[in-house]
Amino acid sequence: MGDTTPIFVLSILQLYQVTGDVQVLGSFHDAVIAAVEWHAVRAAPLGLPNNLWSSYDWFEMEKQNLTAYNSVLHLAMLAAAEKIGQELGDAVLIDTARSLRANASRTILSQLWNGRFLRAFANAGGKQIDALHVDSLYGLLWARRLLSVRDRVYASVHATSRTRARVRARERCRFFSLS
Image 1 (spheres, rainbow, N blue to C red):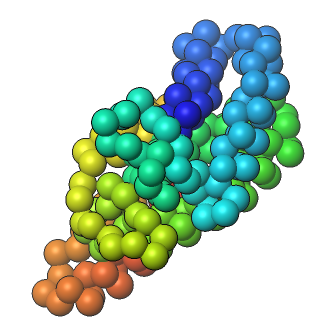
Image 2 (image 1 turned 90 degrees about the vertical axis):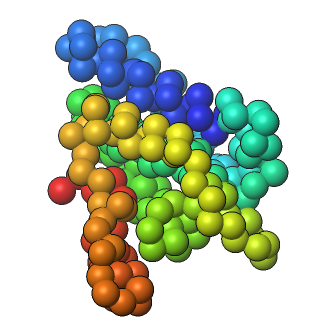
Image 3 (image 1 turned 180 degrees about the vertical axis):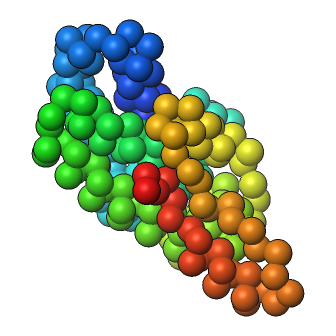
């Protein structure tokens, strides 16, 4: 699913951070890799996982090409997978997570970011609706809690001109940057 798979990886990182037990973390290594690979396949066509079911059945997210909710959790999962790769010394997992996250960041900015907030949905060739799904912030909360990640997507756009605001927002938007 679009949300439970990332939450699994985020939970593994949280378990490690609470216990400090690298053996327990290592016991989930293959499962983390499988989760990242599963998401990578589903993200290949558009840069973000698309048409995925989530725990929000009534939104019919599986009918949407992209959803902010699934996309933000995807980015948080990739950041967590990179951290897990660092802890376990897995250079392949680190590189895979970084590469996927860079591609996902570009896609989320071009397809879901409207200059003020993340659209709830984006559909290829379809009408874009500027609706906000507040639970899209769920992935951001995970990332901030577990990764000390600074979010720049919601950068200040209080400029006198809309165009200037969009340019400033894009300049500041490096979604889930770990710098």
